Amino acid sequence: MPKINDLNLNNWKEYQDILTDSLWIIGERDKSGSHKGDYHGNFIPQIPNQLMRRFTKRGDVVLDTFLGSGTTLIECKRLGRNGIGIELLPKIVEMAKQRISQETLFDSKDKLFSTILIANSARSATRKKVEEVLKNHNKQNVQLIIMHPPYHDIIKFSDRSDDLSNAKSVQDFLKLFGDVISNFLDLLEKKHYLAIVIGDKYTNSEWVPLGFMAMQEALNCDGLMLKSILVKNMVNNRAKRNQENLWRYRALVGGFYIFRHEYILLFQKK
Ligand SMILES: C[S@@+](CC[C@H](N)C(=O)[O-])C[C@H]1O[C@@H](n2cnc3c(N)ncnc32)[C@H](O)[C@@H]1O
Image 1 (cartoon, rainbow, N blue to C red):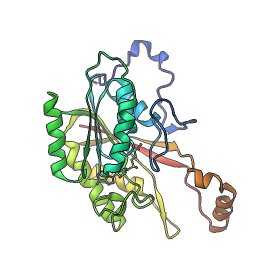
Image 2: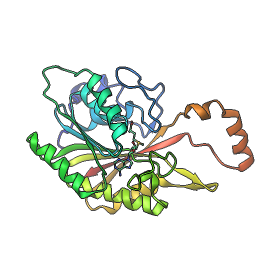
Image 3: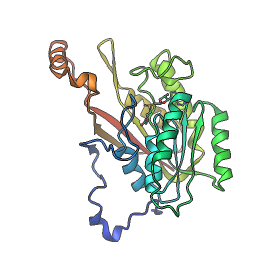
Image 4: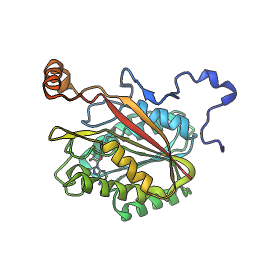
């Protein structure tokens, strides 16, 4: 297998903090440096950190098609990777830019780029813009793609119709999400990885397996091999944390379970 990371496997026992199990129980969120964890719907920095250390090398390019508050690009700066982020909402991009610029480079000798596009990831014009960014830096491909889309309508990020959280139905959401995957798949270097971070949801008391449905969208695209279904613990947001007993009671009465996990779906380009 070609080497796609900087791990020296002659010393493999030294990498105790690199996860290799399919169950990710992560304790405290990393709140160091520019990571604030206050954007509703952000992921914990340990997710991009683990993915980048296992599936990229220093100087590689990481693409995040739903950048939000910039968690992935902050980690890129820390780990010496180039980053391209796409986010629909200009206000959120402002926040991300500020945070990324405040983060210090891993090594000041690194000549890294960190580019954010305010755009809709489902549009082919956006892929062309990413191609231009790569060309300007003498690159052709990206070595890791991270997608952390809205979990359909669980959090409404805006009122815009091109925001995936406003898709009219689960089917519409999946169609748009499938468009995002096929839009960027050509840019992923062969043997490299796509990671989709997503959770399930309830609608009218019925469990909707959004994670598995999104996984099927990726499998429908030619050229991706499923490598892992990782299950990660999820800590409740602040509102729910103060109402744990109430939710336990509701669950007991309603015969349902409270979400405590989400998925990281890992695919390798053939
Ligand atoms: C789950 S959040 C990502 C959070 C991010 N991982 C972080 O740590 O902050 C999803 C993001 O996708 C954005 N979004 C929704 N539809 C989009 C689209 N069509 N193109 C690009 N971004 C979109 C939302 O505005 C939101 O910021």
